[in-house]
Image (cartoon, rainbow, N blue to C red):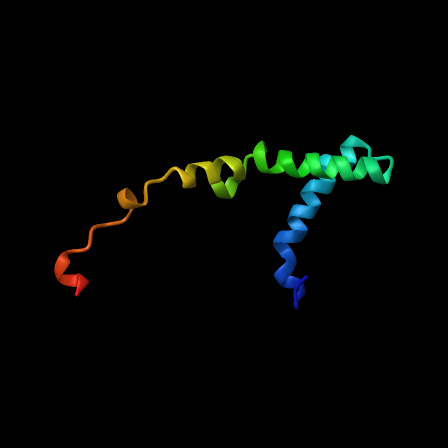
Length: 84
């Protein structure tokens, strides 16, 4: 939860996607069914659904790509004179 409604936009957007793109079309009938389908929907959202903000890849793929970066290659070298 947050202090102000405008701070909650990202969470509400995610909830809307899970509800409208996954749960409603799947036709949830019981609470137990809902629990299983929410787990599946979140898994699909994170592993298969491409996200525009991530360059049309899934969050899981984005995380995998980030974790394989070699930090030494991505950081510019600082001249020794500046390291004093």
